Length: 75
Image (cartoon, rainbow, N blue to C red; front, side, top):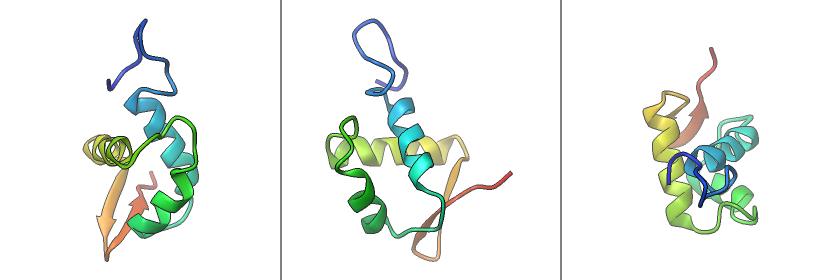
């Protein structure tokens, strides 16, 4: 579910969903704002996949949660 395979397309895997989220996260956003931006995307699907993708991005060190907002880590 994290990585694509022969049964799961790249844009449906969590790594693909996380990529879509990162593209939309150009500025600091509340969780609810980010969900409103992404829920209409075809490959996001539901809130559970959205949260799992955020978990993956956090574990990879690509986002942080600070002052009640999700922030993209700038390197």
